[in-house]
Length: 109
Image (cartoon, rainbow, N blue to C red; front, side, top):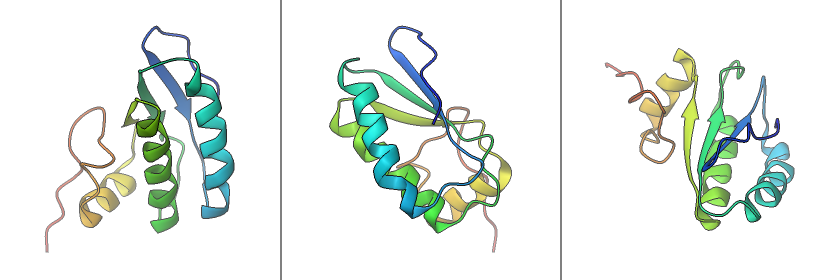
């Protein structure tokens, strides 16, 4: 997780290239410490570096979104690559983990 960019009302963090469930507690603690003193804000989570997303990736992202929400922030994913977009669409988590630049890709059966 990289530090915020300093824009008022916006906190940006970057993840990747791989996150695991074991990373979740430390990432959530760091995020809570970062957001605690900033007040309500938009959290932009840059996920452009994430490669080979899986269920663990979604778990970590959902936990970060919950942490942000508990502190009065809403989270959006930025720079998501096609595999993550497809995973969000497939799992139905696109509304829980919204993309900054529109909906997840359509999954056709």
